[in-house]
Length: 561
Image (cartoon, rainbow, N blue to C red; front, side, top):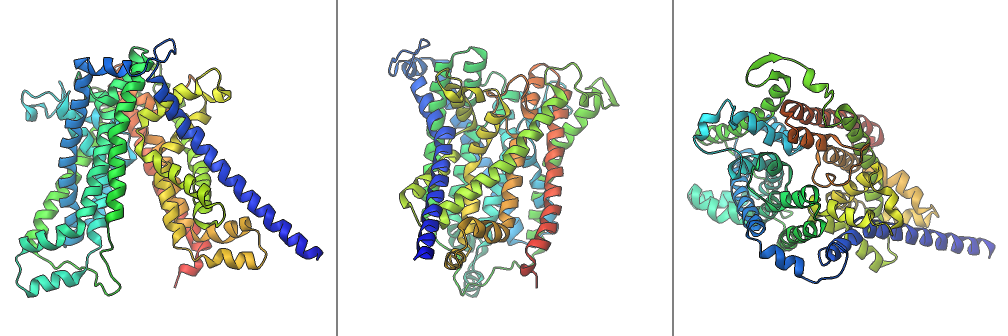
């Protein structure tokens, strides 16, 4: 009887511990997401004295033509970028998955480079290429790069890899039997494409379009550097808050920017639910057949895209090594010293390393553990569903909106968490929440692949759930855990929109320094800092690959034949 009482106590204590963990996860999402957004919404309904005035701020906004034009400009830029990126990414993804063009792995590697750099880098490079003193200025004729043209080109460079990854996944899942049937019926290539290929990837195309549109309408880095006088919603938030100290109007613009992002997020989730499996248990993987003309055409297209990516990145590297463009082209490393400049130089880079490292370590542990509680626990179904819902929402919140919401919530004098404002801790929290959703979904996908009997066997052997989690779940899910950590690190190094309002005198980050160096006219030093971020991200990716290989070799020997 004593042993039975001890066992019941153990079960009760474990259940209580799971409840505490789930409540902590819910508290994290409330403090990091829900309460700041609620505070921002209230701020948009108040005047500068904090008095409630209803929709007066919104009426003022929509009665000011200059401000309303930002909405039209943002939508036009986002639609144009979406059209160009989706078409170009689809053609390149088709070349990778449906042709026998050479150099596929090299092309895919090169297309990942824009993800490793801040969105400010392409904008700086475009100034050197097509600006007033640009070496290819004549290609644009009388068209200025400062405005919609430069914004669209810069956004296409930065967003293209995200679209390519989605469409490669969509085009990879195809049943070869459909194409064999079309060939046996002597169906033309064009008709096969229209009746087999496109219908099979329609949901992937729609999801890709929603993702690209959201990234384009919420991006801040590219239009801030190369937008000129062409106003967008994201840059309007920065101007209202930093330039005019008009926090109420900044909150209004943030709410307006949040609406299309939420709409596209909901539409994307709906599309993903409608999507059905393309491969049955009897499906035959599609293997493209060689066609010299087709393979050559797609190779030219893909290599041209790769050349443009290398040109933009190479221009930034070259600009950071030149004494004074275009008058003194001698090589120098002085731009990497950042002495006496307004960007905090190497100190900001070290701050970014500390912040990114903290986000990678803390974020990976927190996100994967919360996902495990949601997926593998059987108790507290309503609480688990609530945590899962909050984990999905950050994807719909633009970085600028989240950053401004943190000002209103954490900087309030009555908030006991006010002491976090301006510290490295709030930067880590903000970045963790900003990129939470992708990591949560990755964790859920990895955990769904594990047999539920792992937990059942552990419980039957009276093994505490945390021991099963540490000794079984984590080692088996190690590839996903490592991918999450490097994803968080790279995004923490390159993000600027979410943290531009939150840094303090001692916590300025490298990506923010790029922005301030560019504003101060130190273009070469801004390029140098952007290149430094790129090289850091590349180094971490290489280190991640080596560590992954070594750890998997030891921790997952069972995977080896």
